[in-house]
Structure formats: structure tokens, C-alpha cells
Amino acid sequence: MFTVKVEKECGCFKRSDLINNLQIESKDDALSKAIEMKNQMNEEFCGKHDFDLVEFNDNFVITFAQDKPSGCCGGGHCS
Image (cartoon, rainbow, N blue to C red; front, side, top):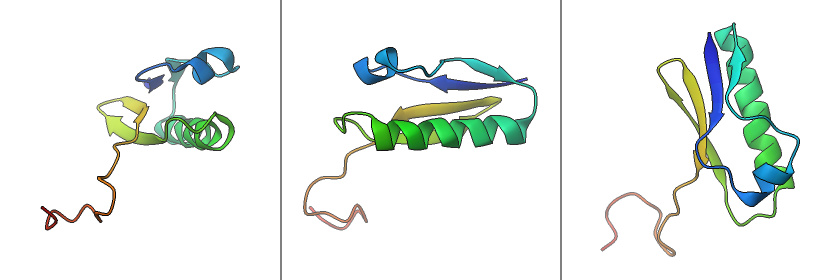
């Protein structure tokens, strides 16, 4: 069994019809559902947060995306 979970439920998530901690038998189906949810959250929510998807053991976790410092490409060479 695989779980699709939202790490932190923002207000938009709580007001949506999305369900946290979905249990899905197939890994492929769980990944597809997690991608679908992440995309819906990025496209339809208020835009205060961006969302990423990470796999951890048998979980697909939707997390808040990490912000890059402005003006930096994130390559590690900017100081």
C-alpha cells in the first residue's frame, strides 16, 4: 500500500475537496494521483505557496516548494 500525503495543509487545501493520506495499492496509481494533486494545488490554489512532490519509502509527499534566493540561480556559486 502506498500513501499520498500533504505534509502541511494550508488553508486552500483545507477548503478544497482534496483528501490527505490517500491509501492506494499500486505505486504507479499513487504516483499518478500525487502528481495530479500537486498540479491541481499549483494551478488552482491562491499562489501563496508552490508545491513539490517527493517520494519517501512508500509515501508520495506533497511539500511546500523551497524558495530560491532572488537573483540567484541556485547553483551554489552566488554568495
